[in-house]
Length: 117
Image (cartoon, rainbow, N blue to C red):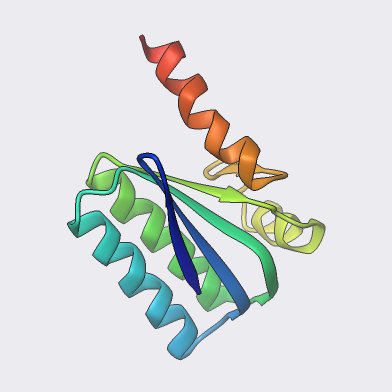
């Protein structure tokens, strides 16, 4: 997992699997740490995630809810077909803001600011 700052947006790039175990715990802790540091715009790049199980989906939901409770936004970028299918099967595709690319997710923050303004 890597992290980079682009202006006021934090991009967290995941790699491997989001499953029960250390990876999902580390991810949850990373999001918690970012929220506690006052980060309000987080993009989760899942391009290099090759598998997600039900625990991983639960971790995503928990992170989404944590972000929301901190008045922050968590968006998913590079959502590939199988990942999208999992979100659709669990009826979470409408809950998460998903984008085909990292740049589209980043640009969406500017669009949502213009719409709110």
